[in-house]
Image (cartoon, rainbow over all chains, first blue to last red; front, side, top):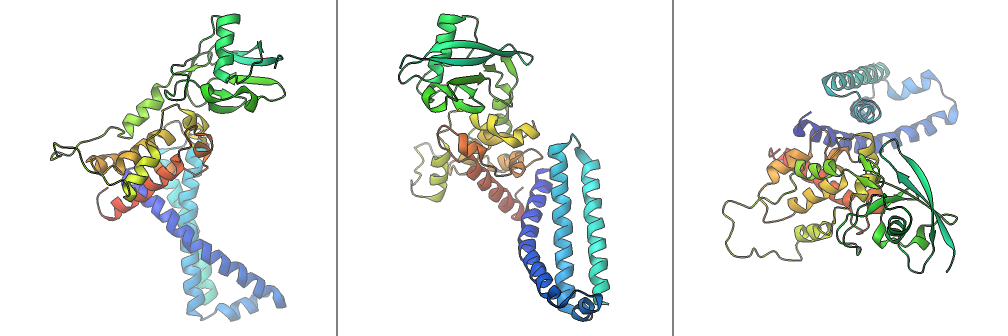
Length: 112
Length: 238
């Protein structure tokens, strides 16, 4: 990859890490709050359905997680295996895309 | 002091093995003294590298009891493990023979990282005045005392994983030029050090900082390069 692309990936990795640091804390706090009275699908949906704030939060959370995981996976594979080049970059991009689609689908499912 | 030190020394090339020697213990003895004793008194076929003996030239680095060190400034007393010393060539570099490594790849990376000063086309004929209290000059000063011993390179996990990685010493050198107000080669330099095996590959494990005999901070230099490349990218200069 070019110097430009590598530097973009580094910026993306740092920026998504900053988002995830906050998002994971919110997520953990929500879990602790949500299980106080027992966890049920109805209780979760009551909180998220039709709530644009939760939708926005989970869309951003899933986007950051998907990008962060793809870039990180590419780095780990390049260090731990001889895999390099466009095939690895495409595979990492596919991993990101899969996580993004799965995450956004879940977020929209909770909202709709 | 009148005991003996059990010393195991790597002999041969990649397929070599450790050979045992017994060396008399002395006051203020350095690891380099031990190696020299073996070659002069016990086994003249031992190959090793040294020059200045006072921590300036950077040629005597070896792996001492598993840790890369400059042997001329390492007291035996401080690194002995149960009265024993194990000496191997530096890691992450091809072994030529015994304790001597081929440092070609190490120094080629300084060239790849554009580690040479590039004067500006309109450079003043007189001395350039660089204020010592500017952040750039301070950053350069913190990195310029590198003696090129290769200890950081041998201690770096990322070099071990990716042999193409430029490594702490070459990147630290690049940083001292990025922060050099007189240098005009930063556009090419930042492009050279931001590639696949450049500054962004560093995980900030800080083994280089831990092991550098000159107490430099290559991890900090590399962090500076990461910021400099990001700024250059956002300004459209990368």
